[in-house]
Amino acid sequence: MAKILHIFRAPKKRLPMEELEEVRVVTNVGLEGCAHARVGGGLRQVLLVDRETLDAMDLRPGSVRENITTDGIDVNSLAIKQELRAGEVRLQVSEICHPCDQLKKIRPGLRREMRGRRGMLCRVLKGGAIRRGDTIEKVSPRPLPFAEVSRSGLFAK
Image 1 (tube, rainbow, N blue to C red):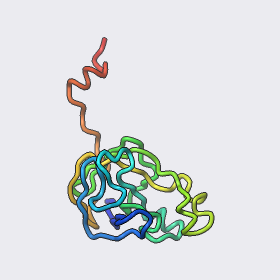
Image 2 (cartoon, one colour; image 1 turned 90 degrees about the vertical axis):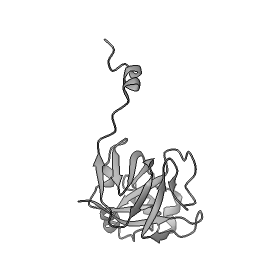
Image 3 (tube, rainbow, N blue to C red; image 1 turned 135 degrees about the vertical axis):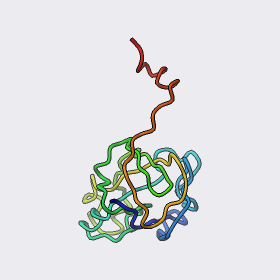
């Protein structure tokens, strides 16, 4: 079963990430105390990167500024809108994280190397606590309330 291997947050932008044993994750914001978390934080609230990718690229967990390092789940193959349960938290994959210029500070050419392997950004659908060692798993999306299904035209003839 896939699990959370490491948890990181940025106490201030551009400063080194700090590793945590556990953290509170706030609905529609991100990790509590993270400089990148903000109310209505859009699609970029939590960054997931898998250990397998880091190992293949000879990178330490946290070095590419991910919030959660996973083990046993291929983060880069997750579909947009896929929902995940991590500890008490429910996430929704919102977009691919594209490599940025910050990666060249780690080593020359890393930005190019990480294309398609930088991880996935998620929205926080339901907050709660996450801890190192918590399982992380794919879950089915919640069904839409009947009123939303009706408005969507799914029942239209």
